[in-house]
Each structure stands twice: as structure tokens, then as C-alpha cells.
Image 1 (cartoon, one colour):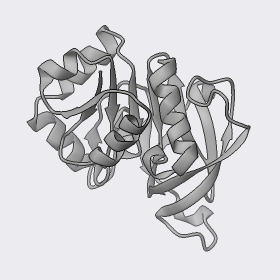
Image 2 (cartoon, rainbow, N blue to C red):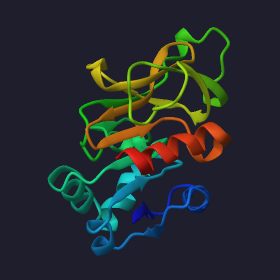
Image 3 (tube, rainbow, N blue to C red):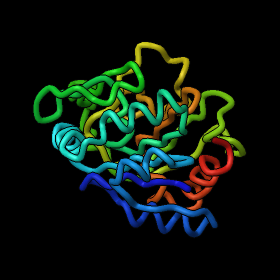
Image 4 (cartoon, rainbow, N blue to C red):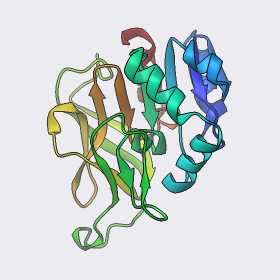
Length: 205
């Protein structure tokens, strides 16, 4: 069973519809008992990092997620803000610690590098697949996905970068570290490519 975490921020039912289309079972839930017994977890997210972490703490889900993913090694896919929440911290709407499942911070795009490009980064853009990856299994080296974000993860160790995109600067579009992975783009809004990636998460993790 795939558990899609409901903490008040995310395209919950768009993701669930995509999972159902792929023939997999899923449930949208904030129940710690259901989350602890998940086979896989999807953490979606749209909006403020600060507010998202506040909601996760209020729902008593921070410890549950850390235990399920780190101790039990249950696969998790973070999507957009959900990917950022897997990191150490963000400065969006004020400094806030994240889930700390992967050692990187989240920072706003640096505007001086953009030369007329708009922030937020919105729309379909090309991701360069960096290495052999379970998420990108079967994809070509260049593939388009849908983005909408003003912040991005800042990795000091590029070893876990599964996909790279460029918007004024190169940034991590997707990462994969053992059972923990994330996409800055929205697979549920990325048509066939997004469905294919979600299928890989369902099948390969």
C-alpha cells in the first residue's frame, strides 16, 4: 500500500489518481498507524516550507516519518515542496528545520544569475538524467517535466543527484539515496513522463 501523506498541503488527489491509473493501491492519510505500515510513502507539497513543517509537527508526523523511513527503510518519494522537506532546513518564510532525511539545505534561487528569467520557475523544462537511476529507469538522457518553484535544494554532495535542470543556474531536479528520493518537478502534472516516473517508484522501490 502506498500512503500519500495528508498534512494540508499538496496535490493529494491528483497524485492518487495517477497511482490508481497505474494499477497500484494507495490511501491518503495522516494517521500515524497507517503511515507506519506503509509499503511506500509519497510526501507531496505546495506552498511554504515553514508552514508545511508546522503542519507536520502539529499532526505529530515528524517522528513517525523519520522512524518509518530511517529505521524501517520504507521508500519515500518527496514531490516539489515535499522533496525540500526531506532536507535539513529552509529559509522560506523564516528559518525552519526540515525532516533531515538527507543532508542539504533549501534556498531561494539567486536572482542575480537570472538575466531576465522569472522566479518562480514555472512550466515544462528539461531534466538531464545524471546516472543510472531507479527513478529514471527506461528514460532517455534528456526528459521534460513540469516545475513550479522559487526554492531549490543545495547539495554539497552531488553523488545523489539523479537529475539536473537549469534555470539561471544548475539545480538538483531529482535525487535518489537508497530508499529516499525526491523530485523538484511535479510528476502528477507531467503527463506521460510523470506517469512513467511514478510507475518506476512503484515498481523499483
